[in-house]
Image (cartoon, rainbow, N blue to C red; front, side):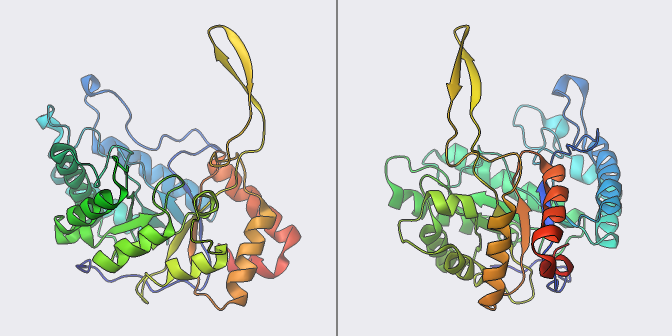
Length: 328
């Protein structure tokens, strides 16, 4: 795969903790979410992002997933007035990228579910390629290095898992080189597990992001978690810090309403909890270090977002003091 034309950051000696998009601990918007009638714009999102970076810096957080709709309606086929936002914000994007680097914040993207490179619908696949191409253009305009990855799923099965995998690979290879260089593939919890992601890596060079909860839900190969982690980390170049996704399954009952009736709904194994199980986290890091695995960054996919991250730090200090200096 093509290399990003920017000097990549050296791998960190520590494990950076991050969270996606929304801030729970403060009233900070992640992007301009107004409807098209109100003329939303990337410039507004970037102003919000500067405030977000100050919040992250104030709490010592150096890993963050950008909102997928940072540039609203950027690729909408019926709204051409929004298509030049990256060019219109070239200076602001460069400044925000400089700010992120100055604060040592790693940024990544995770496009919406409609980005389906495995789709048999040629038009939908073309739209997915376009979305990934402009996402890469956005990160390039910020001057971000190779560790600013765009994480995708393989997508749906569409009645034939093998054919879907082949379409996924074909469409990756049709992407512009700059977009290929940014891609990372996450294993999912229903259709395409770690073995499928590793197969795609062998075909395309795409890096693999291990999602620990997804691996627990879909692991036909029976790989222990630390072995799966080792396999995923090996897909990353030596000069890049790998990343993983970590979450805990929801265990609480909740009420739902249907036809004006209230029902108790038990949790599903693949649903994210509000917070992270600190003991599972500690065990994973201890095992990874015992195996001599390289450091990696950890995107915490918990519903309490930044609040969950800050609480996990406190729990690490209480239950695993030897890890405190290693977790940022």
